[in-house]
Image 1 (spheres, rainbow, N blue to C red):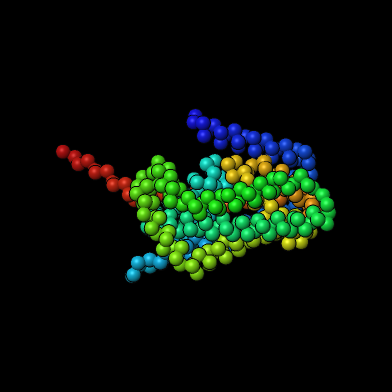
Image 2: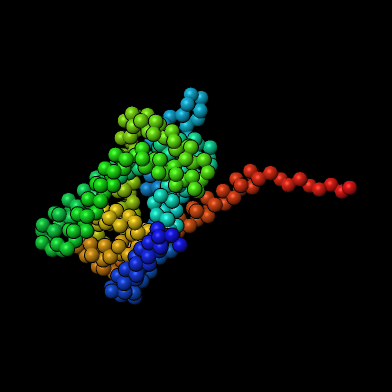
Length: 338
């Protein structure tokens, strides 16, 4: 077992222990009791609603895609939305964090016949706008929290991790913008181990990026769509709380979710921010009128929703890969009787 794999395993186990500890501290029975309130119809509605933020995310990626050459059809928006769904599923379900999800998402589009250089260039530009949109949403959450604490004068212990999350978000965005070319070379080398030929495909992406960034209306559209996706995703938490009969203002839920996303950024090395997300909900929720049991129930329901979307998406993707492999495999010659 490599050191990186061991570190990932230890981080996952530590996060799992923290999550179980947070639920145990509040009480398993109260948390599970709140979870049960959502019911099957409510959970199904929450899963169905998730198509909206996923469509917005796919639209942002599609907006970044450079226009095709003369006479070539433009890749469909639905393809990018599906690729983003599988990409999110891989990130949420599989234990190899963000980069593996990017590889899987890129594979979905290249298997559909879209040029790898187009896919990777659009992905890098989309990631830039997504990080920028997250920073805007983060600053909104921090500002709203500052106003809340100024009136309440409480919970000063929250500031260090939140400030750390903001700093990490800014650092990631700055590094991503400044180091895109070296990162592309690194991505190509890593991708080559999983997808043969990926390094060659990513070699010309840097040139394509310049053309994408020159299309300022498209970049502005991607930024707006990514910001809308962050807001829509947070609104999904408000919808879940409504199904659990928890009455809380939408603006307060947006603030909570913005802060949770910020803290998740500070723990990007832990798969799914396991444990840290639960602890953050238990600490931040009460500031906005959510009791700890309801806040933790929300975290568990969001994880269940991610699994309900991610697992079928990955299975469908694997089924498609299997069909392509069978079509590409030449039939064995039949033996003839002598």
